[in-house]
Length: 196
Image 1 (cartoon, rainbow, N blue to C red):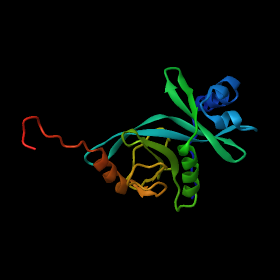
Image 2 (image 1 turned 30 degrees about the vertical axis):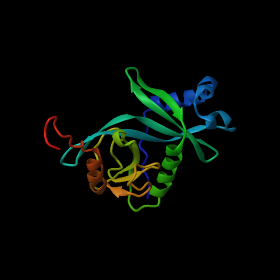
Image 3 (image 1 turned 180 degrees about the horizontal axis):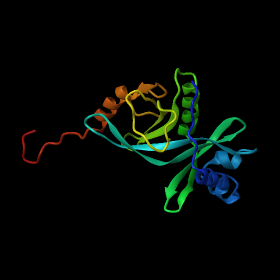
Image 4 (image 1 turned 90 degrees about the vertical axis):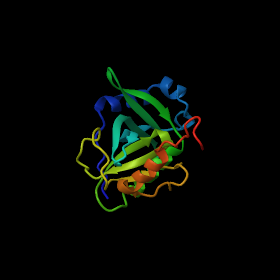
């Protein structure tokens, strides 16, 4: 399937390139891969990072754009990632990082390229579950910074996924949201003085 990667804001990309070109920023990054990798480092595959703050009882969800993430590549392999965030002065570099979500994102993107259909890739974070998914949005011409989860969109949980949710298995939003709703539902607590 063709993935239609949305264009990142130019200032976000510029801020990551500036950080990559700064020996101080790379040296002080807590990513051994950036410090130890010989060869040119490039910022590629910009993905908007949306956050799922809540799921309503109807199952629809509210998301908000939290930033843009770039995979940092060296010789055709992702070695780290860079996040940007929106500040009062515009898009700015936030930090470099490495770890399982970098390789899981790269794997999920390769997996998505073999699927039927056309999608716009995004990342969706569910902070309450410590969960990150590749969000394959069906409206590939949409503005990557806006939009809501459509029932037919696909979510691919990245490893490590929460217990009971299979990593790298695509789920339709309509199938996965009820599972997330049950996980996020507040536990019933007895009132003080009431029989348990």
